[in-house]
Every structure is written in C-alpha cells, then in structure tokens.
Length: 193
Image (cartoon, rainbow, N blue to C red):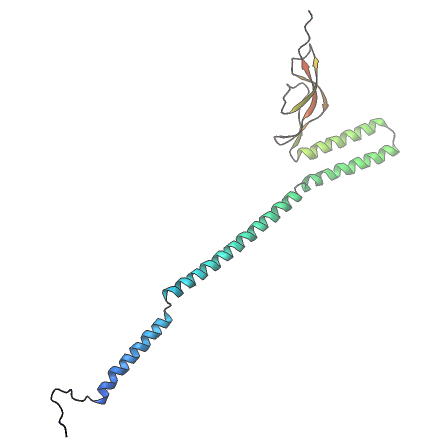
C-alpha cells in the first residue's frame, strides 16, 4: 500500500465544500436575473428611439390635423364672409319689390320718387354698416387715388383741378377704394391773345 503524502491537502468535510458552490451559484443566478432586468445599452437606446419616433409621428399628425382644421375654418370664413351684408340688403330688396308693385297700382310720380329715395337711403345705410361709404367728390380737389377724371373743362368760377361734376359716385370700403368717382375736373380758363 501506498502511504499518503505529507504535503497533500487533507480531505475536507462535504458540507464545507457544498456551501461555497451554492453561494457561487446563487450569486451567479442573482447576477443573471439583474442582467435580465436591466436592458443592455443598445436595448435602452432602441426603446428611447422608438418612443421618440412615436412622439414625432403623433406630433406630425396633430400638426397636420391642426393645419387642415385651420384651412377648413378659413375657407368657411371666406365662403360666408358676405352673410352679414346679404342680411342687411334683403330688406332693401323687399322694399324695392314693394315699390315696384305700388308703382304698378299708383301712378303718382311724387310718391314713386319718395319711395325710391327711401330705398336708396336704406341701401346706403346698409352699406355704411359694413364700412362702405360714398366718396365725396363735388367741389373737392381732384385726387387721382379717389377720382377718375373723364373730362377737363375750363372754368372761371372754380380753381383748377376742382371737381365740378360727378358722373358716377365712387365708394370706399374702410380705406380701400372699391370704385373711384367718375368726374369732370375744372382747368384754368384759356387765355385770350
């Protein structure tokens, strides 16, 4: 038989040998669970990218919906912008129709003239409620921004470039000319030689 060597490590108890192996296995299991719970940097970046992409897509869709809604509202506003003036002109049309019916029954020119004047005044009032006003021309100095000269007539009674006759009234919407006044303008009298 052989004898054990003196330098040999004495056999250890089975319990002592199993404890460190179990601890090592538990530590390894805990580390692998922790690694499984904590995503890798690539997975974290991928998840963040996906979140940002989703946010971008949602924001784009919201912006597109807002743009479409604004366009729809703007178009509707343009489409129905003349509704208030139409409402104000309807009574004028009604009164004009009544005047025409009355003219067929009653041949009195004074009453016809009075009815026509009332309707014209009502029409001017309806337009002025919406910022449309007649351009004053007669006796005013000629302004090419407001008036259109159709003719010049020499005159001793009026200073040159004064409006002495109005063929067609002009109108403004607030500060913008809708139609210029068509006028006759005075010029200096011709000198006799």
